[in-house]
Length: 63
Image (cartoon, rainbow, N blue to C red; front, side, top):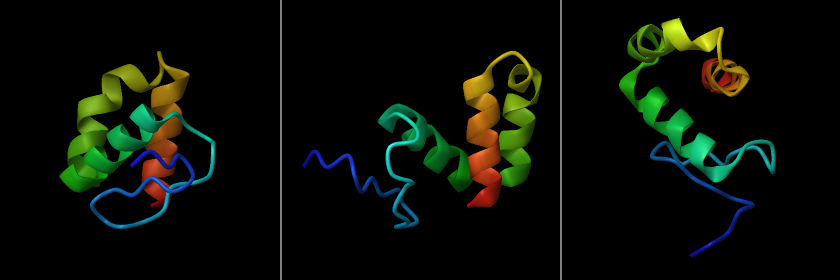
């Protein structure tokens, strides 16, 4: 099954259409599964260096 328009994580939410590559969406879903407190600590030291990680954190907070 390869449908890029509706990538679903464990929560069953449909991802935004065409904004991030599938790999990033998978990362977002995994980080959200860990819980906001844990994944913010895990990524804290890298966020300022990597614009994609910053976008992942922003989208994760919205979800």
